[in-house]
Amino acid sequence: MKITRFEDLDAWKEGRKLVKFIYSLTKLREFSKDYSLKEQIRRAAISVTSNIAEGFDSGSRLEFIKFLGYSRWSISEIKNQLYIASDESYISKEQFEQAYQLSSTVSKIIYGLMKYLKTTKAKSH
Image (cartoon, rainbow, N blue to C red; front, side, top):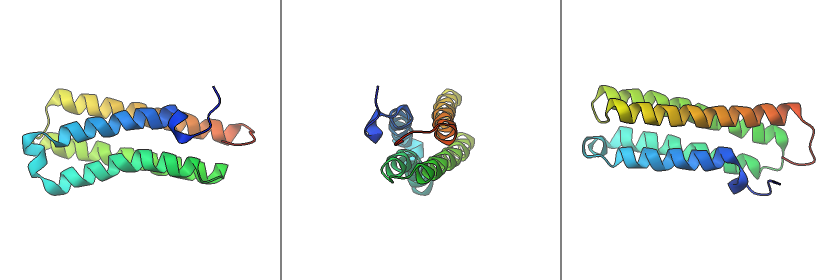
């Protein structure tokens, strides 16, 4: 399958699932009351897919790789915030594990794409 738009990327598709899951967690009663944490983790999740999209459309392989790195940094931020949410009992252990695993999966997919872009020659991304 030829990738012609960011929506074709598995990294973006899985990132979108992560955003949806983070939003579902932050709608939980106790989590939703902690406005700062709720907004920060949502912004980090949005940043994952936004940076994939922005990097893809940058027109430069090096810029794309840079933006994919930003996406991975945002995933690290999400993981840290999940610990806080868990420590504050905003989410259950199972919810933490599910979100953490999804975050790790997205990070691995992004890393694989970065590695591919760094090691292959292509006319476009």
